[in-house]
Image (tube, rainbow, N blue to C red; front, side):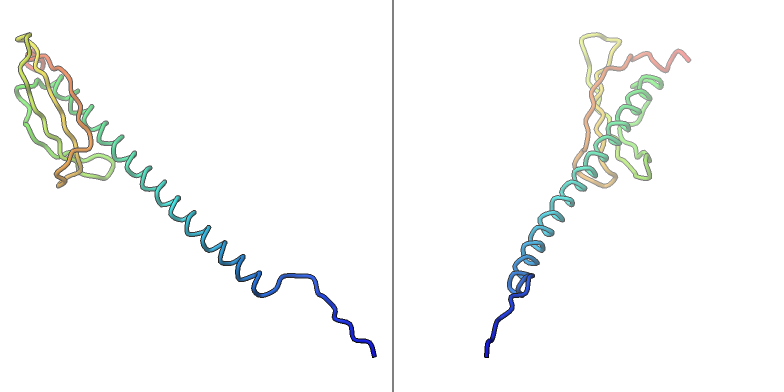
Length: 127
């Protein structure tokens, strides 16, 4: 009597488990990389919108005049509230005021963007 063992093609259970383990580890790494990328994009979006708010405030200061605007305000842009702080400094030119505009999410202690510029002291008074 002749017994022959037939070898079937395919993977053993151990090989399949090792392959699944490797895929699981790779999936965890891919998920972490994706989350890091999403967080980076979210932070970039926040900085861009804060920059827009700061630029808008600097333009408003040029239109209204640096002397008449409040030092602190809350602005709504892109469905978020932003705290805007304005600091003024004297310059060598008596007609110019140096202005620093700091913008951060409402209620946050740290600013996201700081923008510096110059405003004509007489702007906003002629209209």
